[in-house]
Structure formats: structure tokens, C-alpha cells
Length: 217
Image 1 (tube, rainbow, N blue to C red):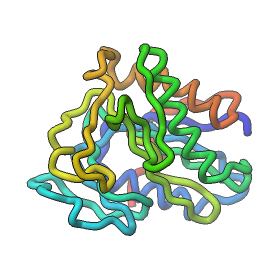
Image 2: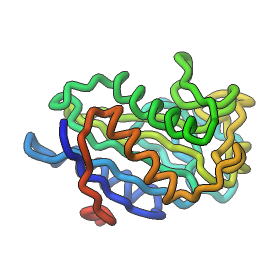
Image 3: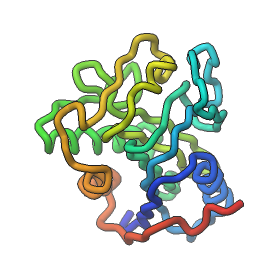
């Protein structure tokens, strides 16, 4: 793999971005360049394909969207960095486990820049600091290509996580970089995370673009 297109979408409603990822995956061909999309979302709960709704405790006025990734229920909101790798994993010869590891290690390496010791767990995908969840992972593979990705809590309202069992785990505590002492904003964290992600994906560089090709249906 060499260069990849990286799109900075900014703050977006969840569903249009999800639908755009589906369209990108369904219409890509052997010549389509891989992309990574960065954004954050307005408040939403998302439920994976086989998610148990009993883990959605008290959503209140936050929308709930049933989607097509793996995993259980999670929350997305402003100040949470979403990293969506839209990769032809067959062409790149990357296994699903390898991709999950690359996403997790990107966050682990980023955290270490700030003196934070973070780690992944073999029993529960994501990144944790002293057992508290900092980032969650959920992927979908279709037509040999990936979409969805990793959600890194940068500076997030954590109260909505108390209304669910995050990722299906009761009493799982959630944190963000701000509460761990990091003062960098979302844009700065995005820029600092990109070199780690490129390295773990075996990429030599990126073509940076503002905004998606289209979020229209």
C-alpha cells in the first residue's frame, strides 16, 4: 500500500455518513483508491447487527440507529474522533484482526505521546486505560472491503454512556483524553493520530481533502 485519501468531514449527523460509507463500499472497484474518513457526530446511539436491546438502558431524547457493524451498543457525540478506514482489505492483504490491531495501536501510540499507558484487550475490542474504556472498535467487511472503524473519546460529554451498557458490558467505565489530562482539541488529536495510523496500515503518505465526495443519498 502507498498513499491513501484522507477526508476531514467535521461534525456530521451519523446516518448520512454511514450511508455514504455503504455507497462507497458497494460501488468501489479494483481501481478505487482506499480512503480514511475523520469526523465527529451529533449525539446518537448505534446498535450493532446482533446487539441486544437490553443494553440500551435509558436513551431519552438521543436517537437510536440500528446499523450493520459488529458489536453491541455505543454512543457517539461531539468531541469523539471517528476514524473510518474504507479499505480494500483483499487487495491490501490485511486480515480483519490486523486491521483492528492497527486501529487500536494507533490510539495506544497516540496516548503514549501524552504519557498515558493505554492497551487493548483480547477479550473486548477497544483501547483501555487502567480498565477504563478510551476507544471502541466496530467494523463491517463487505465485498472484501472495510467500513465503520474506531471511536476515540477526546473531549466528550460522558453522561450518555451512563444510559447504556457500553459495548454490552455492565458497569464499564468510560473516559476521554481530556479527563486524562490532555488539553489538545479534536483537530490536533486528529493530526497527531494520522501518522500512527498510516504507519500501522503500512502506508507511505496521505492525500488530505476537506469534506466527503458526497453525503447525499
